[in-house]
Structure formats: structure tokens, C-alpha cells
Image 1 (cartoon, rainbow over the protein chains, first blue to last red):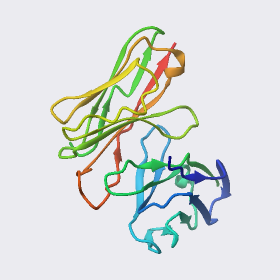
Image 2: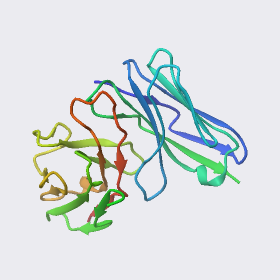
Image 3: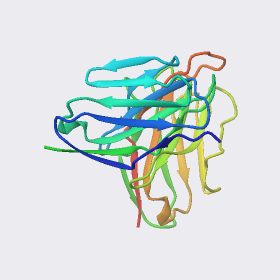
Amino acid sequence: GQQLNQSPQSMFIQEGEDVSMNCTSSSIFNTWLWYKQDPGEGPVLLIALYKAGELTSNGRLTAQFGITRKDSFLNISASIPSDVGIYFCAGFTGANSKLTFGKGITLSVRP
Amino acid sequence: GAGVSQSPSNKVTEKGKDVELRCDPISGHTALYWYRQSLGQGLEFLIYFQGNSAPDKSGLPSDRFSAERTGGSVSTLTIQRTQQEDSAVYLCASSLGLAGATTNYGYTFGSGTRLTVV
């Protein structure tokens, strides 16, 4: 089945630094999504990408839908302590397909 | 409601007992999903309801797990004869999920039910 690969499992950065997270697959996806999960909460949608090559920003977050449709990245600029959480990439392979999730990256931000 | 509501938020049960977890999806969302998240792990798909279609039960880990969705809205996930390995956060999500639609809609998650089997 389709799998989304996220690594490393954990990232540790200093407040104010930028961080980039990658998500890759051997399958083609037609929609990419990035979610963030705060402790004790469900994942919340950050950014949705619908076209290959699309670059979308949401505040300090920027995400891109890879040209090959097999990868996506999420950048967080000027990190702050509240950026701490688990970041999941997710994707749809086609209309009416179920959303496939990566295993997530746990981000820690040192003040 | 405005968001996906799950209850209870926390449940502690004794091994061997049955539990029911409830999910109220966003009004008008035709698709509803249950996921399980064990400590430090990703999201494990359990079951998917889409409108009046037969549910996709392909992720249920054993026959102790079942789910219903009544009237196309509220869903209940039931775990019978709970085991300690069932301890996890159970997340429900809903989406517009219109059959035949060409646009895929992201899922909106509830805050989850944290189940602890002692």
C-alpha cells in the first residue's frame, strides 16, 4: 500500500531557528496535507496542497508539493516555543481515496 | 457542532470490560473515520464510514473492535473484553468526503479519547 516516509522521528532546534521537514513516498499523491498535533489534542490541518509544484504559505509556515508528486516539504521559520508538537504529512492518491499519514516528526524547541 | 466532539475525553477501565467511545462529527460531514494512536506512535487507521455505503473495516485489529454510525451522524466505537494493549488515544475525524468528488477534503479531528486499560 501507499506509505509516507517522515524522518527523523524527532528534531530539536533552538528558538528562532528555521526548520525543514520532508515527506517522501514511492507512490504518486494528488493532494498533500500537513497537520500539527499539540499534546492532548487531535491533529490540526496546517496547509493543504493540490497541485504539483504548488508553494503555499500560512504565516511562518511554507509548504511545497513536489514536482514529481512523490514528496512534499514543510518549512517553519523563526521557530517559537509553541511550535512544539508532532508534525504529520498526509496525502490522497486519488479522488475518494483514504488519507494516508506519515508517522510524524516530534519537534522540540529550546528557549 | 462547530468541531468534532468525542466523549469521554478519558476512560480508565479494567481488563476484560467492554467500553464505548462516542464521536459527534461536524454537521454535514458525510465521512467519518476512527484512528488509534499509541504512545509516541503515528495514526493507525481503524474504520471509515462514507454516507450510506458499507463501512471500510479493514483497519480493525481484531473482532473485539466494532463501530456503528447511526443516522449518518454520531458514531460509537466499541471494544469488547478490553486488553492492556488496547490502551491508546482513539481519535475520530470527519470530512465532507463527497463520493465522486474530484477534490479531496482534509479531515477535521476531535481531541480524542484516552483509554487506559488496567
